[in-house]
Image (cartoon, rainbow, N blue to C red; front, top):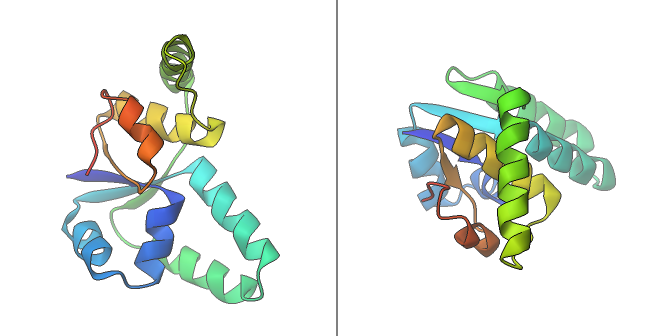
Length: 127
């Protein structure tokens, strides 16, 4: 399974939540969306363990099978289609999460997040 992890699941992984560690270890690939990196770095910058958190993130990103996911023109199309659909249904998502969903849908990756608002996107495969 190719996995996309959200910010909250990365934090769970860092906190050694057993279920999360096991799921991430069974993935054939793990993708960290660019917006998750941004959210993490904002959190690091506001915390007291910035250097340690950066070191752990860089260590994670350097593992085989772990990749940073960036948008391309197709991602932008998927993003806009999801946005319009959600707005029409009165179910907007936070914009960062919409990028995560767009990358997941575009590539057929399985999203791993605790956020319930992804439930409004049946086209997003989830754990």
